[in-house]
Every structure is written in structure tokens, then in C-alpha cells.
Length: 295
Image 1 (cartoon, helix red, strand yellow):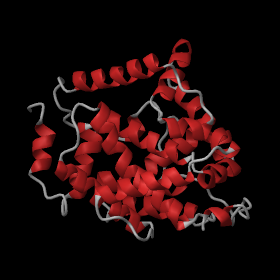
Image 2 (cartoon, one colour):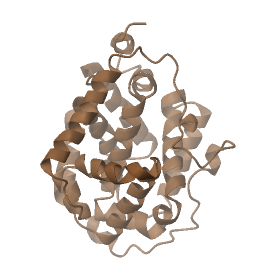
Image 3 (cartoon, rainbow, N blue to C red):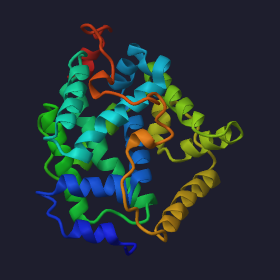
């Protein structure tokens, strides 16, 4: 297998018809590490929207169960890409996601924004740090994949192109990013979880490195201090160097399920999709303050 094997495989597929296969090749074979980092960072950005960050803080899921929340989110998002949207496990995963979302007062525009981050942040991550950027066909397949996921989640007014998703995400963040105590607590809990994946002596360096990857609007929304410019340059150059080195390796031949990732820790004996996530009875947090954000 040549180093560009999966790029050539994807080039032979139709992004409008074979988007699940293309996305699977990207996320599990060509860019498995980068995809996980990018999607984690995409979700992290959403906490800077006060309506989202405050709700997540009020549920106490991140404050009390950050590892399980991280694991459940990753495991519920995986089946459609691995099995296709019509597979029973994929349908069960999407049904479980929808059940959780419908238990809370979540405005449509917040759901659409989160979906946009899943499209835009990974593409920008690959442009900046991966061994190569997405091809035009791979971008179109990613858009088609998340449009399909959005339809299964009942999200309305989904953009039809990458440019539409990017414009939506950038405009939404410019309007909605703001400092919020709840969002900051969720971000802090997520960073603590991230640091727990590394040996204790390395954690201060990883914490600075993480902030070095954040843009100024995100740092300001969380009230985080920006690292010195040389640290930012060094951190980002290190990621770019990693991408070049990965590009010299032979292509991955078999996908690795997320349950085999050492960062997924909650289910050493396996799991059932219908038992993942939370099971609130009704809506357990007040939402009077959210009516303004929904306007």
C-alpha cells in the first residue's frame, strides 16, 4: 500500500453517494488521531456559547462525570460512520442522542451551530496540522455526511456547502461567544480530563500547549490567559511537524474502534448503546435565562 492509498481510494468514490465510506476512511484510517482531536476541539468551542456552556454546567455531567460524558459522546457518534446510517446500531445511537437532547430546552440555532463545528473545525485542523488537507471531494463528503446526521437529528436549515457551514460557524461565534461562569467550569473540567490522559509531570506543559492552540476569541470567552507568542509558535509548529512525520508512515490497514482507545475508560467490560448517555426525567434544570439566547 502506497502512502497516499486512502486519498486515491476516496478519489475513486462519489462524495454525494459514498459519503459514509469516504468519511469512514478519513476518520478511522487516514486521520484517526487528528479526527478525534479535531472533534474534541470542536465540542470544546461550543462551551464558549453561554447558552450551551451554562446548560452543560447545570446538568453537572461535566463537573461530576467528565470521563463518562467524553466516552459516551465519542461512542454515540461512532456507529453511523462505521456502519452507515441505516444500520440498527447507528439508528440506536442517533435515537439515544435525540432522546437526550429532547429532554432539554435546546434552541434550534444551537443545534445547528454544533453541527457546523463538526464540519468546519476538522477541515481547518487538517489544513493546519495533518499530513495533508482534505481534498475537494473529501470536503464535499464530510458536508454530506453531517447533513445526513443533522437530518436524522431533526435539525433544520442545514447549509448545503462547506462555505455555508463555515460562514454560519464564524458568524455565530462572533455574535454569541461570551464569558460565562458555567461555560468556564465546563471548559475547566474538560481540560482536567485532557490532562489526566498524560503523566503527571507533563501536565503543566500539556495545559499550556492546549491554550496555545486556542484562538483569541475562544481564550477571551473562557477568560484564559494567552501563552507567550513563542510558545504559540512552537506548539503549532510541533503539531505541523508531527503531521509531516505521520505522512512518512505506511497507511493504516484496519480501523481501530474507539473502545480500544486508551482514553475511553468507562467501559472496560464493554457497553450497550441504549445504556450510554444520560436519562433525565423531564428537564432537570431551569431555562428561564435561555429564552433570550434563543431569540
